[in-house]
Amino acid sequence: MFVAAVQNPTRGVVVTALFAFAFSFYVAFWLAFPRVAALFSAVGVVVAVVLAGVYYLFDHLLD
Image (tube, rainbow, N blue to C red; front, side):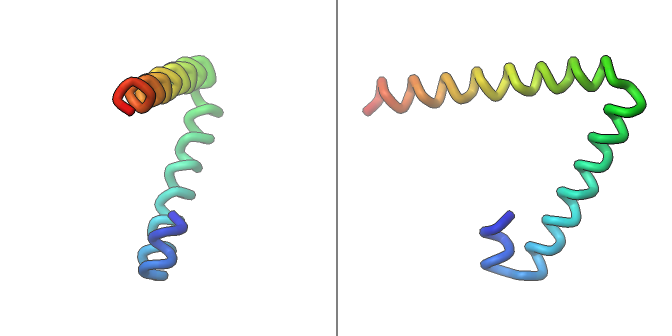
């Protein structure tokens, strides 16, 4: 987001607005369907941890 703002301020404003819009939908999803949102958030955290682990392993194995 910050790189886009430095390279092109208009693009930075648009990217920031889209991020705020997406975050508002995430909050509304949590308010409407808390159990499903919790499941999706947990799955997202697990995927992020797995990807970080794979990145870490490949970084050290291929170095």
